[in-house]
Amino acid sequence: MKKRPAALITGATRGIGKAIADTFASEGYNLILTCKSRHDLLDDQIDQYKKTGVSCVGYLCDVQSFKDVTSLYEKASAEIGQPDVIINNAGISHIGLLTDMSPEEWNAVIGTNLTGIFNVCRIFTPDMIRRQNGCIINISSVWGSTGASCEVAYSASKGGVNSFTKALAKELAPSHVRVNAIAFGAIDTEMNHFLSEDERQSLIDEIPACRMGTPKEAARLVWMTANAPQYLTGQIITMDGGWI
Image (cartoon, rainbow, N blue to C red):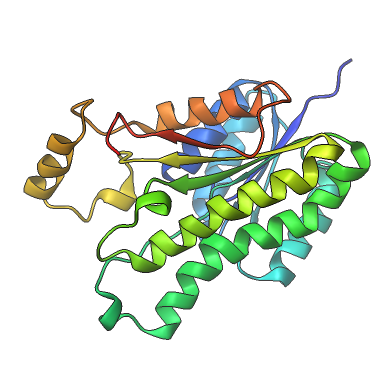
């Protein structure tokens, strides 16, 4: 019997991450899932996927901690094996003026959104290199290319993700490991629920597609990217309804 492929998805309990996990489970992947604190949501997901015959494990993991990610690697390797696909989705945002931002808030955004990707890739990619096969997808944002007022730290972190992606893709291409990022525009998730109804409508009015994207659409693009030809690497793929 052919061995099922495995995917590691960080930040897998809500929004885009949850939709990605749902999609990969429906496609028959075994799953390694992480979240920072919501073990209840993680347990519910695992139970749901196991009913469909998918092998699935979940761990609490703060991706900005090298120690946590090392522990994740050791446990996941023993229970599921090495992932064929890594989806670095864990991320946080911060809304506010730079002049009001504390060093702790800055470090939390950069640590989760950028250092977290370094930690995961640093620890998991040596096995992909040895196998001469693998796919890494980093979840980014259009703000990583254009910047957003009152989201300086978030924009900086996602700009770093984009450059990290392009550079790592060049390093790993000779080992047949693909590295791409997907820069999403406005996706209808909890991260955007801070907007008032008027603010939400004003945002939608700016988008040529006349709506926000859905988590399912975002997840489908991640799936397509994971299953794209080997020659697709080092790209920042944008999905924003024609917005930017």
